[in-house]
Every structure is written in structure tokens, then in C-alpha cells.
Amino acid sequence: MERLILDCDPGQDDAVAILLANGATNLKVEGIVAVAGNAVVEDTLENALKLTEEIKMDVPVYRGCSSPLIRKQVIAEKIHGKGGYAGPTFTQQRIKQCAGDGIDFTIDTIMSNPGEINLVAIGPLTDIAVIIKKEPRVIDNVKRIIIMGGSLIEGNITPTAEFNVYADPEAARIVFSSGAEIYMMGLDVTKQVQLGKDEFKRFKEEQKNSPTRAREIFIDGMEYYTSTCVDANHEYPAMHDPCCIAYLMDPSIFSFVERDIDVETKGEFTYGMTVGNWPDKNSKTHVGIKADSDKFFDMLSKSLSK
Ligand code: BDR
Ligand code: CA
Image 1: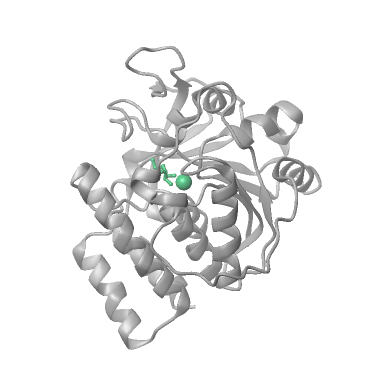
Image 2 (image 1 turned 90 degrees about the horizontal axis):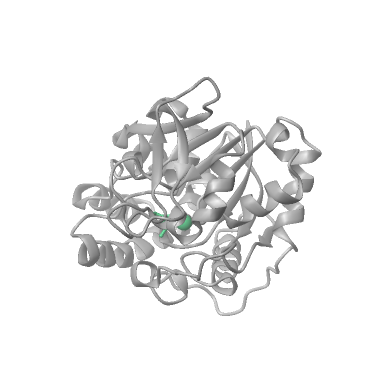
């Protein structure tokens, strides 16, 4: 059983990561922390609360940071819709409440369970940087940090930068240089897991044959996400964030290379770029480079049938 804290900014693909984790039999989600990213933190928090309530996921939801360390805030409502998570319809009356401060929760959970907790970060890395600054010993006590962010190839918000890193490059730099055991699931690997027409058809058929609320929420979100992704980049939506959860469920789906990651925080044209230096003996970042997308979608199908 892998135990994890999910730091996220739901977000269409963040929501899929939550749905995937909720259906996983070998994961225990200790808590969800919502950080500002795809939308402002009030919205990402609300989205996490609504989604987990709707799928009856028994997990506390905490509030993370509301703005990047230094840079001016950027959000991605163009892709994810107004409020960061357009598509599904949720009940108006939410009962579930925020469980408190996500920074303290994450530090306390990691420090009281040495070597046990995976920290999965699928939004900008602001919270993780703040945690490292506040309690540097988390680096030796966390099991792994699994990050959706960065790219060795090209970016998606600028030609050189991926959104989560671009949204807070100074935070990303602190995390990648922290010395923690890091798995970077960047665009190199997540763009290999795209919800194309055939994959989407499969989920719709499965829903017709044996409907579940989780799959309905997935389909409604993906209808929206597909349209914005195709409009923005003429590509089917990549399952960016769920790749981190999929790695924990079955690491054999992915292959990695070792790199020493630097984050560009000054470049006029390359701000937010992740630079993969050739590894040295201290390199601890495993960069995902290959994914078995068929296995991924089989796994997602199982989770959504719950
Ligand atoms: C990342 O950016 C966000 O918009 C997605 O949720 C994902 O975490 C992909 O670049
Ligand atoms: Ca995200």
C-alpha cells in the first residue's frame, strides 16, 4: 500500500487524478491540499471539496498557498474553464468543509511517518517550496516527491515552459534542488497518454453498459477539456496529472532517465524552462520518458467503475 498526500489545483486533469486515486486498491490518500494554479485557490479548494464530496471519497481537504512565491499569478482558465473546472454538474449544497492549513498538515504527516509518505504535486510547486523552507527535514523523511511538471522537450504555456513550473519557477527551483528523491512526470511522458477519440468512445460505452457517478463526472469534464485542448493546440487532452497517480499504482507503466534538473528563473525567452543536466552522482530526479498508454487507460477504466 502506498500512502500519499495529493497537492493539486483542480483542474480537469487534477480531477481525473483524484478519480483514479479514489478507485485504486493499493493507495491510501491521507489528504488533499488545494493550491492556486489553474484557478485562484478559493476555486481550486472549492473544486476539490465538491468533487470529493460528490464521489464520497473519505479524505480531508486542506487549503494551500494563494499566490506564487515571487512572480505575478498566472491561471489557466482558458483550458480548464471558469473557476478552473468546467463540465460536470455538482449539487449546489456542499456539506464538506476545508480541514485547515495544508502546509502544516503536510509537514506534520510526513514528519510523524518517516519514509512512508509520497508527496504528489500536480499543481504549481508553491506549497512544496514553502514546506521545504519551513521544515527542511521533510526532505529526509518524505518517501518520494512525484511531480507533474516540466519538460525536457518543449513547453505548453511557452515554447520552453510547462504550465506548473512556469506558474511558480522560483518554487520549482527550490524543490528540484532540494536533494529529495523526485520523479518528474513532465510533458515528455504525459503527452504520450492522450485521451483520443477511441479512448473516449470506450469510456462512453462503458458508461452506457454500467453507469457510475465517477465515470459520468469524468466524461462531463473531458467533453469540456477536449474542446479547449483541441482549440488551443490541436491536440487531444493529455492525462498529465493522473500519470503521477498511475506511477504509484503501477510503476511498470513508465520508464525514466536520471537528470539533474535546473529551473530557469531569469531567461527572457526561457523563463520557467526545466533544464535536464546530465546526471552526476548526486542526481536524484528520475524523469519520465515513456508511458504505456493502453495500460494507463485500463487502470483508469477500473477505477472509474467503482
Ligand atoms: C499541468 O498544467 C495544468 O493546467 C494541468 O492541471 C497540469 O497539472 C499541465 O501542464
Ligand atoms: Ca494540475
